Length: 407
Image (cartoon, rainbow, N blue to C red; front, side):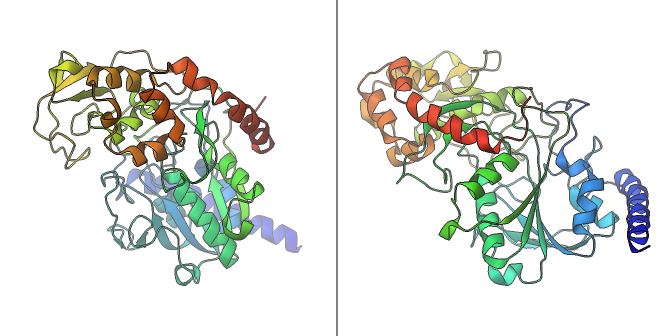
């Protein structure tokens, strides 16, 4: 009888939730979805869309969300926060990563605490004074739910935020739920991060392109003992339906202000290294991470002028200066990671080692200081890549233990 009552209670809750979610979908969410990248494959169902699995875990619990503008649950762009509130879930607070709850803060810009204008829910920044939830912030929470779209690159900081959230859950005895989403750059490529170069743009000894979803990566972090004190958090991953590794996935919203479409996302792992040089990646244009250039004609005939653009970049490199370089908007994207463009612009610069205006930052981004040295020595991409292969082979064997989406 008790089980029957519990089943009926859950069934009623799900029916009420469906009705409330329909109403929530018809309203305008307080979070405007970012500009559309392209329509997701119809058959793919991300973890956040599976309320039948989420609600039984969250029912009668005090819940914290780690979410941003990518945390949507349908084609109308309904936010997960709105959906769960409509389902009667007790949301105590939201933790916000880099770029903020609404995804409109510039890269590296500090995110402030505040309140959601629609729901009144407290917003706590994990990209400001602290990057890890404190014990005080976790005290009135039973469960934390993480739902953020990643792009598969080691230096994309959402996975660093996830690491710190896992650590906070482990230290405070809280359960973590990850509602998983596909990896749009689903490759294993680039050098393995070397010990001593770890930072918020690379916390784990994994390749530049790690070939994992956030759910798989979380299992790896737990399983390999990478949390502080080798602790493990109580983790549940709500798996994606109808997606497997190797299957393309087109994001429904841009994951951060300067990744506006699938093409830019594919180029991002290879072009992000230019952030440690004087070459613009197009921040301050409507096509960031699809162009390269600087205020010097030696870099090419294509021109662009970075501006302060709302929704993209407020204070871009070479602001209001005419830049010369390459237009990559129609270029074939690398199937993985490539040093092609860095090597090309390094040679064009004629500056030698001075091309790397922030050498330590370059080393932290690529994860291996030997790569910069080999570029300066004049080695080819083939020669440089040869040094990665043993580490990649070892990583692939380790990664296999944590995969959730294989044949």
